[in-house]
Length: 318
Image (cartoon, rainbow, N blue to C red; front, side, top):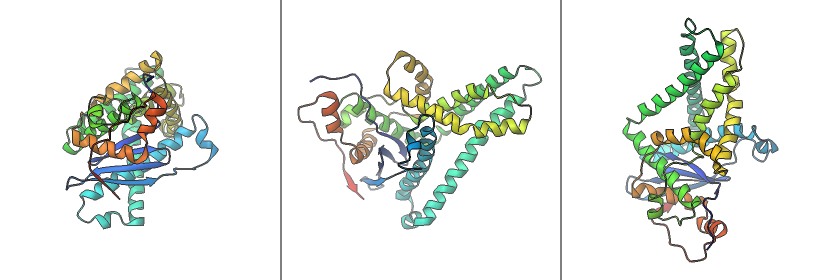
């Protein structure tokens, strides 16, 4: 049996309330551990913005669409997972009302993120103008403040019990993908001993966004303060597009330079992931198996010929 060190699978996901979402191309599954202990799995399709358009294949442009898709789908999956723990589940899943609520929450979240990670760092860095006359140095200070705010934000939300459990499921998601991409059968035992850090993680993407914004905003030279702030907001799609290409490369290459630029994001993942327990891993495995044929993948990419074990876990389809 010939095996390679690592192989790109193309699957990705995120943690949700007491569960995991896994996505493979246009299909995604949300697996949740219900209050009664069963694992519920919902399988759906997600076409995304401008599905089928050639623009989605253009480098640096496709990242913008993928970023928007991730935000929308992420909010929807979080709402879906929360419905299992609401008293009035039917009301929570009420058609147009649910879609409107998801849209409003997404817009509010983006606006809040812009305020905290774009406008606030710029304002704080402007307080140093009396001491720092060099605009380039001020741009670096602004970027440093932006990264510091992000790290402090993550550290603060880690204090919440629900967020700590969310980070455990985040770790379970990464462990499943690492297990498969390292050529191991998807069993609880193999997943538990896999790494909880992954180069394609959304945390690493956010770090690249912060880093790329430092470089890009470094070259913005306008005197008007409102225009400076406006340009920072308008350039966010450009930043997202560049960051997407970097993390896409990171997920497909193990080159030393790629490992170096990925290192800071991997370090921050130690804050946004925690070691899951076996029950959490079972949920993540259920999400993977709903959208991805890992046995076929191992046969095609790692030369498996022997019969592979069944993954563990009890679930119900919905």
